Amino acid sequence: MQWKLTRNIVDTLFLLVGFCLTLYIAIAAFGYVRSSSIHYSNFILAIVVMAGLLAVKSLCDEKIVGFGKRFFWVRLVFAVGALLAATVGVGYVRLNAVHLEINQPFFNGTDMLFGWIMMGSILALTLIHWGPLLTGVISLAILYFFFGYLIQNPLFKTIPYDTEFVMNYIGLGTNQGFYYLAQVAADSVYFLIIYAAILLGVGMLDMVLEVGKLAGRKIPGGAAGPAVIGSGIVASIMGQAVSNVVLTGRLTIPMMKKFGYSGPMAGSIEATASTAGQIMPPVMGLAAFIIASFLNLPYINVALSGMIPGLLYLLGVSIAIAVYAKRQELPKLVADVDMSLIWRLLPTFLISFGAVLWLLLGYRSPAIAGLAGIVLALVFCTVQGKYRPTFKQLYSAVEEGFTLVAILSLLLIAIGPLGQVMLTTNLSGRLGSALIEYLPDSQMIMLIGAMVVSLALGMGLPTPVAYIIVALAIVPFMQQIGIPALQAHFFVFYFAVFSTLTPPVAISVLAASKLAGASFLATARDSLKLALTTFIIPFAFVYSPELMSFPNVSWAVLPALAHVIFMQWVISSASFGYALRPLKAWERWSMVIAFVLGFVGLSESVYAYISYALVALLVLYFNVSRKSQNGAVRAE
Image: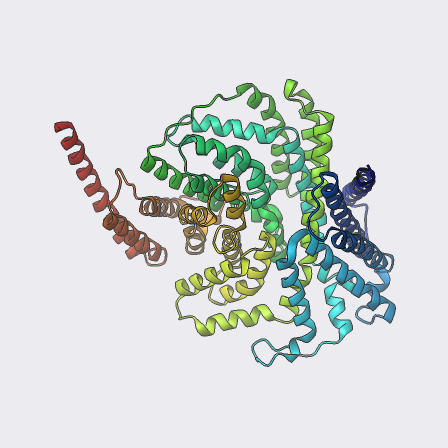
C-alpha cells in the first residue's frame, strides 16, 4: 500500500508538470513568450523533473508487482538524487537565465557550481532512461572538450580551453550545449509526439492492422501485410523503431508465424517495417527536425524530400517479402477483416492527419500543426460509435504522450553537448580529413567508406543520436567530395537508421527476435536480406537528386525509379533464391553479379546497361527451363 500511495503521488506530480508544460508550450507556440533563454530554461527544467519522476515511478512499479531488480535501493537513491539535483541545478540556471546569458562566459564560482550540478544530473537521468552506452558517448565528448589538449595525436589534439569557456558551451550559457537541440524538442517535436500518442489511444493501431489484413488477403504471403502496412504507418507517426516493434510486433509476428513464416523471418519483417517509420515522413525518427535545423530549412521541405526514398524503402521490403513468399509457397492471408472498425476510425485519422499535413505544407509551425491534430483527433473520436475510446483509454494515451515527450526531449537535451563538442573543437572536420587521406580518390568508394563509418558510429544508439554523430563526423567530408548538403545529410541519416538492423547490436532485431522466439543471429541474417533492397537508395539519390524532388517531380525521375526497383528485385531474387522458379547456387551468384554491375551503374551508365542485358538473358533462361521442367512433370 505504501508503494502504491507513493506511486500515485509521483504519477500525479508527473501529470501536473506535464499539463503545465503542455499549456506553456501551447502559449509559446502562439508567440506569447519572448525571451528564448528563459523559455528554453523553463522547458528543460520541466523535462528533467518529468524524467526524474518517471524514474521514481518505474521503481515504485517494481515493488508493486513484487519483482524488484537487483540493487533496488541503490537505484532508488540514485533516481531521487538525480531528480533533486536536476531540479536544483537546472532551477538555478532558469532563475538566472538572463544574468548567465549576458555575462557568458565570465561566470562566478556559484554559477560554476550549479553548472556542474546541472551537467551531472542530466547525465544521471540519461543513464537511467537511455543506458550506459549513450551516456558514455556524451561523457567522453565532454571529457574531450576539457582534456583534448592532452592527446598526443595531432589529428585529434585540441588547444587548451578555460573551464568557464567549456561550461559555457556545455549549457551554462543558455544557448549552447544542452540548449543546442532543446528548441527542436520544444518548438517542433512536442505536440507531434503527443498527437501520435493520442492517435494510438483512440484506436489507430487496430485500424491500420485491419487495413493490413485487407491487403494481405489479395497476395501470397499476405500475413506480412499487417506488419508492413500497420507497422509502417504507426512507426511513421511514432518515429521510433524499437518501441514500434514492441507495440505492433506482439500482434503481427504471431499472425505471420501462423501462416507459414519462420520465426526469424517474421521477426525480421517486423523489425524492418518498423524501421521504415524512421525514414517515412512526417516524423522521421525526429531527424527531419534536426536536419532542418542544421540546414536552416523549413521542416516540411526536409520531410517532403524524404517522401520518394521512404516509399522506395517500403517498396523494396515488399518486393523482398513477395519473393520470399513465392519461394516458400506461402498462402494468402485468411482472416476476418473488421470493416466496421475501419470505416468508423478512418475519419478520425484522415481528418486529423490531413489537417496536420495541410498546416505543415502551409509552413505553419510543427507545434501548431500537432496541436490542431490533437484537438481534431479528440473531437472526432467521440463519433466512433462502439469504437469510441473510454476516458481511461484517453487518460492512458495522454500519460503515454507525456512519457514519450519526456524521454525523447531528454534525449535531445542530453546529446546537445555531443554536437557542440564536434563543432567547437572541429572534430568533425578532422574526421573528414582522415577519411579523405586514407580512402582512394573515387567518389563511389568514398561513399561506401562513409556508409561503413555511419553504420559503425550508429550501432546501439538511438536514431537521433546516431544521425547527429555521423552527420557531424561525415557530412563535412561528403561535401568536400562534391555531395550537396541535403543529399549528404540524408545519406548519413539513412545509414544511421540502418544501424538498428545491422549486427552486432541491431536493437530493433533484438526486440523482434525475442517476440518471435527466434535466435538473434538468424533474425539478423533475414533482416539483412530484406534490408539489402534498401541499401541502394542513399546511393541512388546521391547520383540521381531528382529522387528527392518531391513534390516538384518531373519525368526525369522515372529512369532513376525504374533502376532502383530493378535493383531491388535483382538482389531479392539473389538473396532468397527465386526468380520465376527456385534458383541454383550459380544462378543466384549470377544475379549477385548483375546487382553489382547495376550498383556501379549508378555512376557509370554503361554498367547499368550490361546489368539489364545480363538479367534479361538470365530471366529468359529461367523461363525456358521452368517450362521444360513443367513439361517433364506433366509427361510423367
